[in-house]
Length: 404
Ligand code: FAD
Image 1 (cartoon, helix red, strand yellow):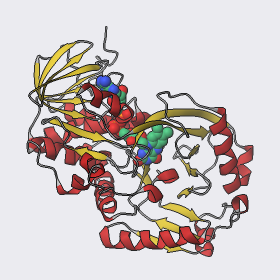
Image 2 (image 1 turned 90 degrees about the vertical axis):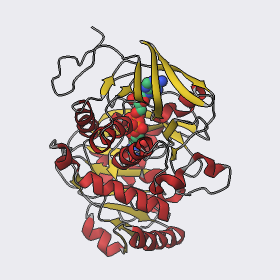
Image 3 (image 1 turned 180 degrees about the horizontal axis):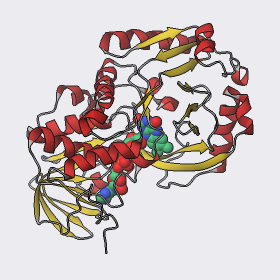
Image 4 (image 1 turned 180 degrees about the vertical axis):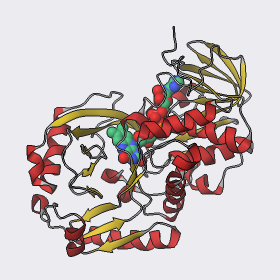
């Protein structure tokens, strides 16, 4: 039996691959299944196959630390992520399935005057374009997070960026909610089905080869996160991406003491407590490109050192698990979405370390793109791949980095 999930009634599993689909989605992570869901539910397009080389949501969707927020730096970013947060807030109702959305607020710490200045800018941009963000002083920070060390690593906390819309959700539930909604409307999810090459003719994609045979298609959506460069290479073009490992870790559960999500770019660390009481830590990508999802001692030591600076009593906590994913990074820390050099081959990539929070809006806008036959929705137009040719980068480096 090739299909370990065949008996799950909630998730209809197709037996054979058909010879042709209107839409082939490469990648059964959150973005791929969300695109299929919006195609089926809002555009009536159901002759769709999601081809996933592993299992549903087993890539970065399973590995992320589930931070949801919209307090970005650019108008393009704030508009886009704010729409995603709105969709997230109603997702359990939309699915009739609990995604365990937990609204906590997110606090980012400033340890230098330069950071305070950039937070002021973010506050104003957020106010104008739909994010709910304000600059708060050390006293307000103490009240929000009484257990926080206000002088971590001898870098006094001068101010904080308080984003009331910061939240988390159960990442597996998000993938399952979308997958159930899509497959129950007729979309086929083929797990253990790897795309091994992409066949084009006259600048258009006509079919993909898989480990289970050839599949003809009307168009393709590529949503493979850390493997974006590899799969784009199969379609015959290069992407301005570099793939880095990104690691995270979690402790055994302790009593609830931390409601907001707390992050410090200067310390390369963010910390949050899950609904089960575990403490999740994350930081920046590993400092070298690599296709590997191993964990390292270096990162364990540096991340724990920063977390203990922020919350010294965490020195007594026990680490439960450490893991990694492969992230496809752009140089401006914004995604690459929309058209590609191949006519009917659409891109959802460059999601690096920050793409869980965008899952709903990516699904919605990618479905609009496909359903319209290639008319790029306004919200994602700034993220086109050709921005790198014409120097129209959307620089989110300061607002992404270790904040995710
Ligand atoms: P994935 O879930 O990776 O799905 C892509 C799928 O494509 C995979 O399942 C893979 O198996 C499949 N695939 C690849 N190649 C092929 C092929 N040839 N044929 C068929 N299938 C293929 N984002 C946030 O917003 N907040 C966070 O707090 C956050 N924390 C993170 C922490 C870590 C440690 C990591 C690794 C990432 C984090 N991210 C975070 C980023 C986020 O996880 C990703 O951007 C997001 O999950 C991307 O979703 P996806 O569906 O595009 O990718």
